[in-house]
Length: 132
Length: 289
Length: 130
Image 1 (spheres, one colour):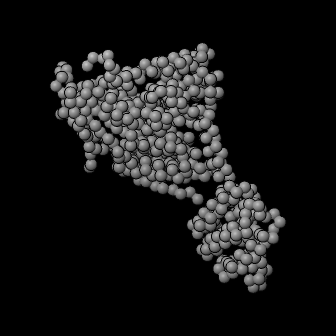
Image 2 (cartoon, chains in turn brown, purple, blue):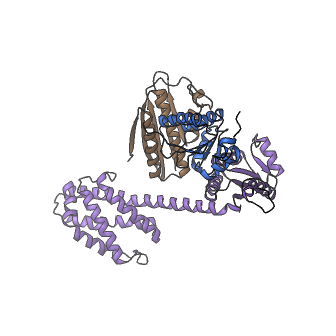
Image 3 (cartoon, rainbow over the protein chains, first blue to last red):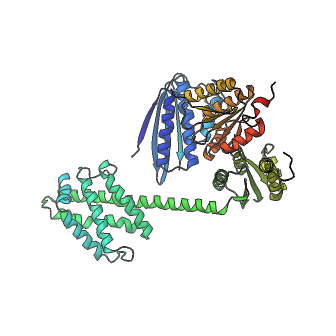
């Protein structure tokens, strides 16, 4: 029984919607305030990436139950140009726009599990998970 | 097949409840020390009602189906309260399993003449009640986990109290070995106390910490950085020579952090620092205006 | 689009951010503050973020940029009231907010501005002109 929630991101107001949805789900599985803040912030970063570099996309949230362990997983999928060098992008200081060069590396530190698939021309898919 | 179990629960619910209660009360293993007859009657009635309504949906196998939501909710609160009362998880699950006997009796006398059909129905009911009984065990496990987690958090908070030394100055004397989890909780407590007491200075004393590894040192530095973002400064005191050496070896950069050898020196420093803000505004008789 | 209001107190500007800002709102605030500092010759800016339960890199960048631009315009900025969970997250995120002055709350923020910049109103005529 996995409750999934899907949010479409096409404008910056949608990033706020993503934050609120992630917060709601995080509260549902009773994550600590710090853990909630971390995953909501990571989601905000990734949703923005999706919008700015991926041309918009879809965020899917799912609650996980692994035995007695509960978790929150978020998928960020876009069909944008893709990332040519993921390792470079994950390194702090990397920037292709006028950002502070945080992007993926920072978001990765805020969650327990971080997965990314991206090839030029095939879009990008990032999955993050926070366990209780 | 569906209609038979469903119909029985619809039409004979009262009789099934009576028979179920009779059997439960006759059971020598019943924990009469923990539950009264009236409570047992109320619990049984509640479960049977929810269960009857759930099977009306026609779904007799998938307890994740929305039709079973009220039943699961009832079992959830039932399991929690039973665990609080001191029942073992087996005793709680047995409550659900014990419904099998009266249900089968009712099925047998339901007028189903084909033995194969009858066995089929009984097996269906059997599997269904097994799932529901096991659900109570899952709930029990989850609630025990929560209790343990809460106790651990409370212990962590108790074992590392943050002390207010002066107006605007708090101190966190760390004692014992620090692991990553404990350090996190402790640091969060410090930051929250800074907000609650409106303290601009926090002294983190590590005199009582025998060793500091990279992880703990990083936590310390992150806490100092977080406090600064919030508008407070941290002083780390009690760094013994061995720890200083370890930190240098691990290339931990403390250049941006104020450090003092002892808590006393840290406090002296803090008082001087905060004096700039508070005493300045106090007019003393000798000052000229 | 609504804009976040900026209050003037003597030669200080006070902003209280109480909504979850979307990117455009944050950018608009940055522009509004810069314009207002310049127009009013403000010497101090206080940004109250005590209601924000999220500060991501975009908002962090906005705060850092605003502070830098204010400095160019000879005004000091202080960001007050960051929540502990937000601070912990920002540190983990690796955001470099050095150069931003911070204080625990509005009162302490004002104290800091007064100490560094001078009392609002009284300084209007005696402030050093460069």
